[in-house]
Length: 209
Image (cartoon, rainbow, N blue to C red; front, side, top):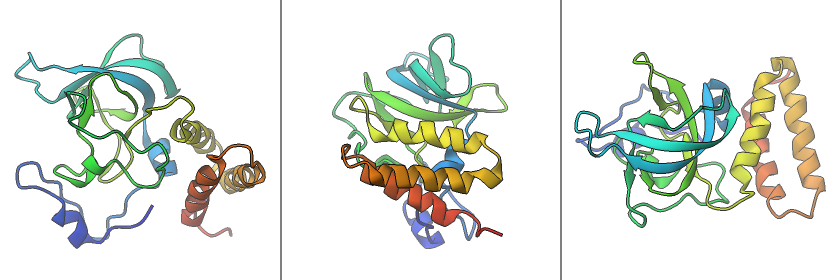
C-alpha cells in the first residue's frame, strides 16, 4: 500500500460526509488491518435497517465464516454502512489486493455502500456503544466483495491472521517463506498476485536488527 499525501486525502472528501486525516497519515497495510481487527467475518449482505429511521446507517449481515475472532451466533449489524440495490455499486475486483474499493475514495473515505445479496469480507471492531463498526482507517480494505469462490483476498487474510498471531520476531520469516512458496507454484494463476502483495508487506516491516 502507498502513503497518501494530505492534499490528496482531503480532496476526496465531500462536504456532506467528509473525512479528515492528520498530516503524515498513511494507509495501514493489509497485515496491520488484520492485526487490528477484533472480528474478520465473511458474510452475506441481507439489507439495511431502512425501516428504523433512527439508524439509517446500519447494515445487516448473515455471517458465513469467521477468519478471526469468534463466529457470531446469528446475524450482525454493522454501523455506518448501508445496503443498496444490485447494480448501484460495483463489486470489488477479485484480482486487486492493494487498493480499497473505489467507494472508499469518496465521501467518508471508507466504503459505505454494499449491494444486497453479495458476499463481503468485513473487518470489524466493537465501538464504545457495544456495536460493530468498521475496523479500517481511511482508504483501507475494511470491506471487500468476494464475488467468486476461492478468491485470493480471503486466502491472503487467513494467512495474515496466522502471521499477526505469531511473535513479532517470526513474522518476516513467515512472510518470506510464503512468498517463496507461492512464487514456486506455477499451477495457480493467483499465486503471483498473492506473492506480490506479501512482498509489499515485507517492504513495510522494520529493517531486521
